[in-house]
Image 1: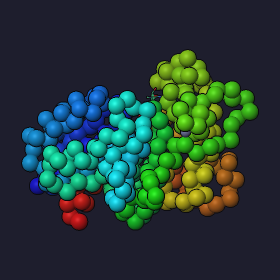
Image 2 (image 1 turned 180 degrees about the horizontal axis):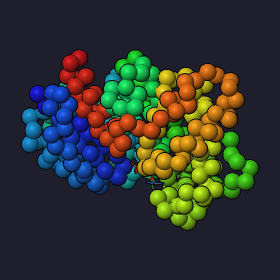
Image 3 (image 1 turned 30 degrees about the vertical axis):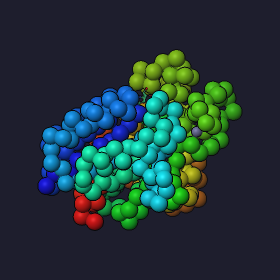
Length: 287
Ligand code: ADP
Ligand code: ZN
């Protein structure tokens, strides 16, 4: 029994094959270029293995309603050449196996619930803070989706009055993603996030914006745990600052678990997504 998983990001596609116990046998990273070239590489990899099911977690937005024409497609995206691509269709044509289809962050949320920092929880929010900000929700072992998949990175937050940065979201400018995703760190300071000193004041602003968002998610969904991942969360001190600001902002309004158990770092660092897609492949196969 072999499961395949694709975590499809805007910069790279991570493809993996795992055995029935979900031990990864082989994993590769393919740069996201044109759809044609990227898919050729994906096929070249999976053609080597007789997979029994496939899980895909794709960058979005994506069509998730099975009864709609755009199901399985990547919708309008700033990523050159990818708008309208029938991702799921391409895979279905090549591999005649059950295929699970969701967003990259939903897959990561699923991975974290099954194998990571949210293991054993019935409800979890996973938020990635990287090139963009995006989140996924799992409730009772199912990925939550409604009309579409949630777009938790684009909510509005209260701006710091001293913050003059216009924001970088191409749609809303100063939504959370526009104000607090990785690129905003460099846009504000001229220094890449990775290189910023630990005592730079920007980290307090960053923590404040993220804490505001986590407060909103908490008030709306009251999950059992919030898992944070993505490149920016490699800054360990940031987690502490977010927890502190969250506690202050919440002002004891709502009872949440001990903060160290409530806002937690990813348990499957850099692998939540790909492991999630393998778990979803397994789930689809068993269905
Ligand atoms: P992606 O979101 O493209 O999948 P990442 O999650 O690695 O990739 O996020 C990349 C973004 O995170 C970039 O904006 C980068 O500058 C920022 N970043 C990566 N590592 C760090 C770090 N250690 N500290 C702060 N920012 C970082
Ligand atoms: Zn936005």
